[in-house]
Length: 120
Image (cartoon, rainbow, N blue to C red; front, top):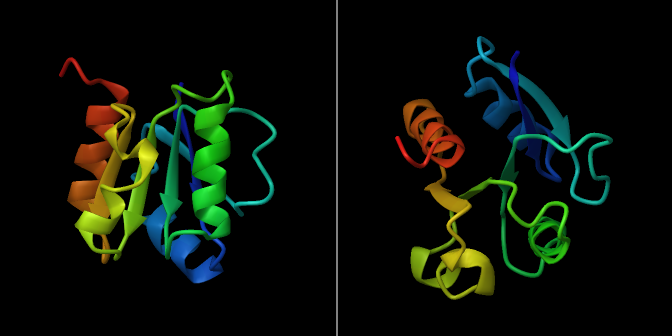
């Protein structure tokens, strides 16, 4: 059974680009916007974070605050400086990983694999 992944970004081009980096074999990839949570909880979110205090960051905060989604792995794709990203409260969460924009396909795939199977 494929692993469900939801790619979230306000920008449709960013959503499409990130979704295309996730291999179709083994994953069921869908796309969403920050203010409309998916009908079914995915195994993992990939969230493009264009800045702090954005709808994307608010989504991350909502996901972490809700007991139902607090442990759902999240890959954050962002071009923000790492020092800025590391200062947010959720950055130290073991279920969150940050990949640098522009995202390389192999790095995204390796990061997803690690978050879904941290024991390796």
